[in-house]
Structures are given as structure tokens and as C-alpha cells.
Image (cartoon, rainbow, N blue to C red):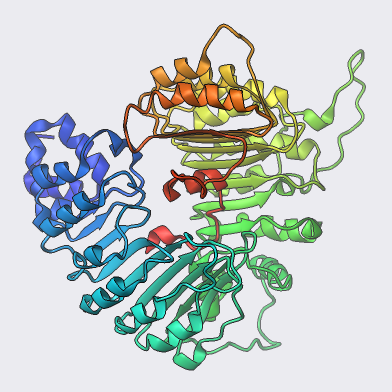
Length: 589
């Protein structure tokens, strides 16, 4: 490393995440001066770096780095840093142009806005009652702002409309890009049509809302709809953009060649009158009349309803997945019926003295889905949900194929009743990059839980765990999690009952003592007693040690919004486990 010239080192370090840059300088202390180099720290991104809870980030940037060189600062989900420290830090960043601070203590209060005067791009969370007189008056100073992202948090349920918002936007009519995320159900909260009319310079408008949203058509102001989906319950996602050069619609001649397999498969989804399976990037290209054969897919979501479980749907999905256009796929969601396709019924072989239960067979030579899996080498996130219409040998034997995806970072599985979990060892050992694991058992599946506890130790990179099961043997689970080398940061467990196999062991004390790096632990026990909850809460609360970043809760139900100390929005992704496939990625703002 020392033999490389500084010019090459600067080029290399410029590609590192900010957290990796810190680890690099800790390993090579004599190269710490690179933390002040303009080419290395221009983009300072700390989004969701929950490991930072043990040291003062603001002080580190102020002393170890040169704040005046930073152009972009991303501190999304670092909810524990006091607002006054963040304001002081921003004040030192004389050349800061972009600030991404969603789910932090910063917002749109008057004293916050006065620190944003030089910003061209801003993303913050704001409570729906914060558009008061001071905020509206201060918004007149945001003359440089071109792009704005607002995540609106519900505080007063009796508010039908977010009052003051229209006056706020009247002062920043020069906005060119606006993203609004409103995740709370309401009859009427935001008049999006009025906002679009007011903001005449708008080139891109993005919305995710649970409110009653009418069918909007903004072509009268030059904004065309380039994405729309309702994949999540009661949520609508919309993207409108100003399109200058739209390709003319091509008319197929009867003399043109017949459609190829990919075009025929895609036509199946176009005729379903439902959300297309692709993400915003591909959806936009299709709206611009690009041919599907020339699109390279990054997101595909085939999580259909039960009514769509048929061979025509499954064949079309598999045809798309095994095409050349899907080789660069990064995120995939589907139901387990895709494992079932093309399988002939098992032969009735004579096994002598033992009966064979084909429904639980976990191995299959030349599984038909293997060809598809081999085509998706770049897959980073996968979500597989069960299909109630499909529960056979092919489905069960398809899960070990997950081990083919060696670059996998996020794995979400809904576990069918007959799946015993033996495949987890192979998956964990082959997919060494898995950081996020979400498992939901649709019924009592003790064999799966036993295999899970035995094999969790092989998930070397696991940081975020979400588990739903009727009954959790808590001491076995926590003991197995302790065998992971202090990587776990967040855990969410939901069950009907807890079961202890060894009454003399205090599993919570043992687990907390051996995982001081843990920042979030949320346990939901629906059929628990008040004493059981208070006893567990008392044990785990003692390990917070006054750290405001650590959230340790035990409850009877998921109710993160109520109470004096509500659960920070930064952890809602783990609690609600909303799909990230073929939806708007708000982290890309």
C-alpha cells in the first residue's frame, strides 16, 4: 500500500464508502491524512451506518476531516445525534451543496432552515404540524434549492390536511424536483394537484402515499406519468417527469417478423391489467416506447395474487428470468410456484420397507429452476413468498438453489409448512455476503426452527434479523445468534409464545452481555403476561447504558407510533418488512 503513489491512492479511496474509509485509516494510521483530501471526502455518506452509535460522528468529521471540502453529506437514519450538533457541523461545511438527513433530528424548523441556505438538494423528515409561521417565513431564504425530499410524519391524527404546506411551497416556486413520502392512511392530507400547479418549474415529481389519491393526469403542466404501482397494501407510488424527446409509437406491420419468446412473455403481463413486474427504470423506458427486447432489467417482481397462479403466468415469468435481458438483475421477488413449473409428478417407486414423503424431499437432480438461477449471477436481493396453490416436491427442492446467488446481501423468505430448513447451512456458507435475513413461518414449523438455530452460526455477515413464528425457543435462538462474531445490529422477533428449554439459564442476560454492538432489539409476544414483559424489559433495558441510539423493547403488539418514546422511523423497515423490489427506491434521491 505504501508503494502506491498518492494520486492512485486518492483515486482508489474515492470509491470507498465513508465507513470503509474510516476502517482503512484505522488500519493504516500513517495514511490518516487522506481523510482531509478533497478528492476523497467530497461525498461523505453515512446512511444507515448503525455501527456509528459508539462514537461522536460530528466531532470526528470536524477534527479528522476537513468539513469545508465536503459537498455531499448523507446521514440518513442516524436518529440519535442531537439537532444542535448537526447544525454546528453543517455550519462548518462552507461548500455543502447536498444534505440527505431523513429520519434524523433535523427538519424544517426555522433554525434548521437557516442552515440550508446554500443547499441545492435537501432531504429531511418533517412532522405534519411543522409548517407553521416560522417555517413558512424562513422558506423565502431557500433561493438556491432545486431538489427537495420530504418524508411527512403523522403527529396529529385529527388533521385532515397538512396545514401550511401550500404556503411553504409558494416561497420555493423555483423547485425542479420534489419527492413526497406520506406513509399514513387518511382521507385527505395533501393536495398534490395544487402543488404541481404552483411549482411551474417542476421537472420531476415523485409520490408515495397511503392517503386516498385520485387518478392524476399532469400532462396539462407538461409532466408525464413514467411509473405507477400499488404493490404494497393501500399504498400508491407515482413518478411524473417532464419528457422532452419522446419516441414516436411504432406500428407493427404484418410483414414484420413474429414476436420472440421475451416479447410474448412480456405481453402476458401487459394483458393482466395489473402492475407490470418491472421497476421505475424499466417502466420509464417502456413508457418512452423502448422495445422490451432492448431493456436490461434490474428489478423484477412476480409476487402475484392467488388468482394469477397458472401455468401461463409462471411460464412467462421464467421465460423473462432466463433471458439475456435479466443477466444484470439485482432485485427479484416471486412466489414459490416458480419452483414448481415443468415438474412431472413423482414416480411411485417401490422403496421396500419405508415410505417416502415426496412433499418434504429437499434434493432434486436437474431442478428446472436451476437454469434460471444460473442466469442471475448478479442478484443482490431476493424475496420468495409462498403460493398456497403450489406445495409439492418441486417447491421444497427449489430452496437450496438460493445458494447459487453468491452475491446475495438481502434474503426474505416466507416458509411453507413442509420446508425443514436443512438448506440454510448451504445457503449461509455459499452466500457469505448476506447482511439482511427475514423469515416468516406461515404455520408452526418446529423442524425449521431447529435447523435455523443450528445453522445461524454460518451466516458470518448477518447484521439485521427479522423472524416471525408462532412459538420461539428463545434460549436456543439467542445462543445461536451469540455464535455470530459480534456483527448483529438489529433484531426483530414476533411470536405468539416464548418457550424456554433450560429454566436455569437467563438467555437475555447472556445474549446482551455478548453483543454490546446491538442497537435495536424488538420482541413482540402476543400471548404474554404483563409480568413476563416487564421482567424481560427490565433485563434488556439495563444494557442500554444511557446510549440514546439503543432501542430495546418488549411488547404484546406492534405499535411503534404510540407512547412517549416511539420507535424511530429508521427501524420501521425491519419492523414492517416492506418490499424493496420493483418499487421506488427513495434512497436514490
